[in-house]
Amino acid sequence: MDGFAAIDFGFAREIVQRGIAALYLVAFLSSLNQFRVLLGERGLLPAPELLSWATSSKARRRMLRPTLFTRIRYTDRRLAALCWTGMAISALLVIGIPQFGPPWVPMIAFLLLWGGYMTVVNIGQTFYGFGWEMLLLEAGFLAAFLGSRDQPPPTVVIVLLWWLVFRLEFGAGMIKIRGGREWRDLTALTYHHETQPMPGPLSRQAHLLPRWFHKGEVLGNHFAQLVVPFFLFAPILGLWTPGPIPALVGTIAAAIVILTQLWLIVTGNFAWLNWATVVIAFSAVSWPGLRNPVVERAQRDETPLYWLVVTSAVGILYLAISWPALRNLFARRQLMNASFNRWQLANAYGAFGTVTKQRIEFVVEGTTDADPDAARWREYEFRGKPGDLRRIPRQFAPYHLRLDWLMWFLPLGRSLEDWFAMFLVRLLEADAPTLRMLRHDPFAGESPRWVRVVAYRYRFTTRTEHRASGDVWTRERQGLVVRPLGG
Image 1 (cartoon, one colour):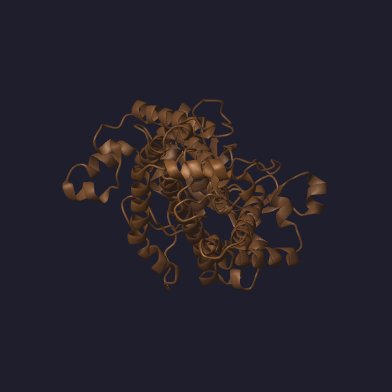
Image 2 (tube, helix red, strand yellow):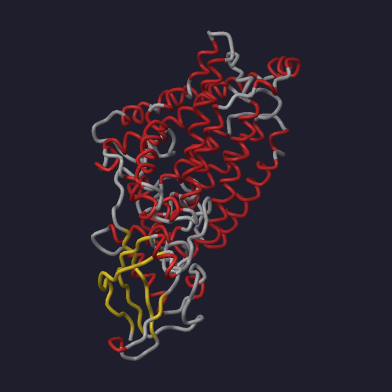
């Protein structure tokens, strides 16, 4: 680092800008494929109804976070146009075209992504109520001020990205320490690989590892989240202490964060949460070997004054709005995945303060028989969540299967949610867009006479059970959750 210019972090900027843009592309693609079915004009939770309610009075309008659809009427076509536009801008940033221009060009591109995706998230209701939505928004906002290739990355923005990683990792670590006993007695990962919302192809193998290994995983997690994040800020010492040591310490800290996140990526499906953490953690990776002193001097000399003013203003803004998140990290009642302002910047993050010990799945069944009591029931298959006992879970992350995720949350609630009741109605109607969200429709597009919901306890098969049956899962019926509907 050299005052305003983070001259050793040009490579880090390339990774961060392109990586965040790639995640925006995935996020807009996910919305293009799913929003209209889940939240569109005929969605399970129609966004137009929320907008109509919110815009009926000034008080209600203030309750809704910023979205373009309070100024222009929502239609499914406009939502699709927004997603296609977001994907096009994201693709340009991934290729690196805006970064060849002056710094205001990539700034505008990222701010368009930030504002466009905020428009979607803020009317997404429970289907967009995940911590990684606000993480992507905040990361996109900060990436807007990393500049272009005409000048080195601004030190203040690089440090703000470290602050984001710190809140993300240290916040998650504190949530766990304050949460369930399983994180303190080191048994959490004995259960987690099996009971996580959406297992991946290697989750079963990870679950079957010895208990001592799972305890080591928890210890490693605590070290990576509670100790390592402080060392991300070590390069700041390089402003006063000559030599490569501060930058090396920061790079090692980033590498530890990245490696732990890669382990989570290969053993689970947490949408873009882990991928975003990997990308943002690269902001602490310095690469002095790529420096060109002649080019650096020219870049520093050509850094526009307006860019110094803009990035300094962003730093001052974050100083002003970060206090609630900092206080929350050390609060006795720590908030998880909370935003303290309408623009979802300087947020509080964290996940899995407790780990479920059993996996309960709601299996949706249908039949064309007239008598539900003597019927032959057939199961609907979801794309990601467990169903067929022989099917190995697939890797979907960073793509986000929103319907499958909310199906995992249903057994944890005290009552069924409104969207799920409408989902069952759509199955009775054999609604084509809804059926395309599933992996398998047992009625090939025809309407069933009845649908019902049965709860099962799922667990991974042992190695012995797998050799005998070939099954990946075994399950035990728990009871009827929703009695037959239809007729």
